[in-house]
Image (tube, rainbow, N blue to C red):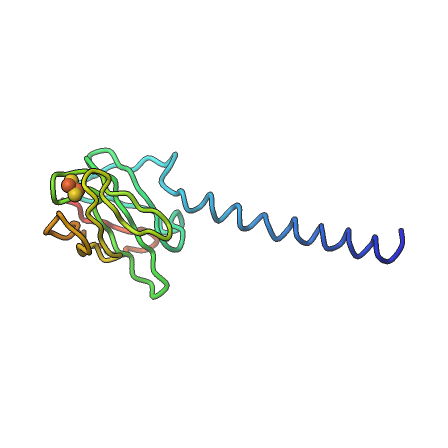
Length: 140
Ligand code: FES
């Protein structure tokens, strides 16, 4: 193997290794899928280790809508109900576009505040507390 071939092979190996964490991170962004949570005594208990930095979408038994958990770099975790206050339509998060209701197009910022109607109300924001290695979201 000549020097040029060796360097090319080494670079290709490094590039392949660099891609692995990115794929793992993307899969991590889909957290909540395959994990079963249930509301007990008006709250959800979610292991902090199961949350990726940024947006996590959670579905739970006993909750009639999906929940967005935003794990921020300052350590706070914001919990928003993803049902629209206008007529209860589903609100979806799209990377780069933010939060948008699929039925009539209301949009909301990262804190759940309305940025475009017809909704006149903000998304419901649930209080969160950290207890040990668990996140408690009070949805009751
Ligand atoms: S239900 Fe969301 S904008 Fe109408």
